[in-house]
Length: 209
Image (cartoon, rainbow, N blue to C red):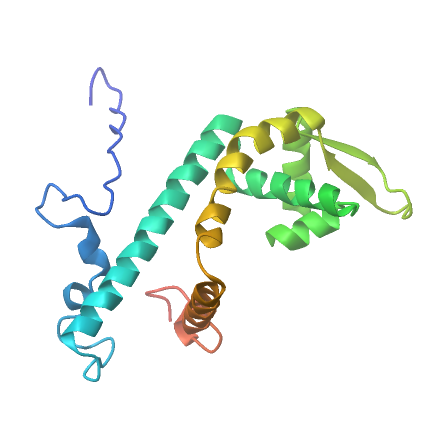
């Protein structure tokens, strides 16, 4: 405490994969199954040899590097646009709707974001007051509103955040067709492995009975 006021926390730089923390632990260790599960409590890996485990660790580390890069880009995007994550997702949805010739509605935005009608109204109020979106009468449904992104906001998002996000296309384009098939199969398989269907604890809170 200084002069009766709490000191603000000093920002700590996020450590990247390949670096070492102040505690002497490599950042990549969090993706190493031997470091996370040395006794095999989480999974039986007896049928995977040492080289296989090393390769799998490299795969998990590479995925971690990708998540770190996406997180840094998302944070920079939000900071540049002065918007939160939900706002950014809403604007991206509006850009896609415009490009597809679809009329975006509050109901469609709520469905896309997975938020309530009340939360969607507050979100649109906030974006409209900041000059990012426009509400108008729906061209074919008198009960609904049409939501569109303003040209200025769309141009700012596309020329900065959108252009950087689109660079991921180059990585996929550098793969052969067969390599892309492998990547698609791997990512979809991993998504299924991480699915929460039938997972009891996912619907609860630790410590509650």
